[in-house]
Length: 268
Ligand SMILES: C[S@@+](CC[C@H](N)C(=O)[O-])C[C@H]1O[C@@H](n2cnc3c(N)ncnc32)[C@H](O)[C@@H]1O
Image (cartoon, rainbow, N blue to C red; front, side, top):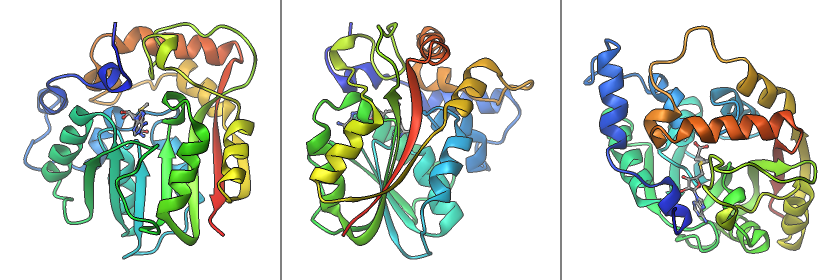
């Protein structure tokens, strides 16, 4: 049983497991393309497809600065830096994930564009107005105080900046099976309907530009695994317990209890 959010995620040997699996699959560890990490470093429903949906509502230009809150081991940060030319900072509560994010970023030669820091979504270690845009993928399910979280995202983002939240939301009343990918027990699990995020964003003074429910993507992600699996998976990130967590998330999706929603806001 874990006694904190970071205790649920943190584990030893993440980079070694991922790199060894890639070497076993025939990749050269000195010449890794960041894309080969996608099965393990995109820890959200839809994987890369989810990240592309986030990218499609961001208007980032080369040289701008993006913050990815709850960045995990940095897959989204590296992808958005590569695809836009923006500088990306990732911040995450789990020290083992931040260490792995730094190591993987060095390994694929992207440390000039991407950096990482340990910190909490409810107390971000950055000055006001530090970033042109902010993303947050599959993190709010671990955060009880949505008002404080949204007000922190708003605080660090510059005027007219875009804030994109892609989170697992509650879509029907009912008991969730545990362990879930974001928590082993209900104790550290705070999924809420999209309307709670939207209300918190409104209290933080953000303008709501729109929300889209990606339930179809979730059904595909859990029910139609790829014919040829990628060389690394979330099992390499979280260890063998990931199998049960993913099964439970699939059950909750198929029961209509949860769905990933993409919410876009703008700073006044
Ligand atoms: C399901 S993972 C998603 C990781 C990453 N965003 C992605 O999509 O690949 C949830 C992440 O949120 C982080 N997290 C949870 N609560 C947090 C908080 N209060 N502040 C910052 N990060 C948090 C966890 O450490 C973990 O890395």
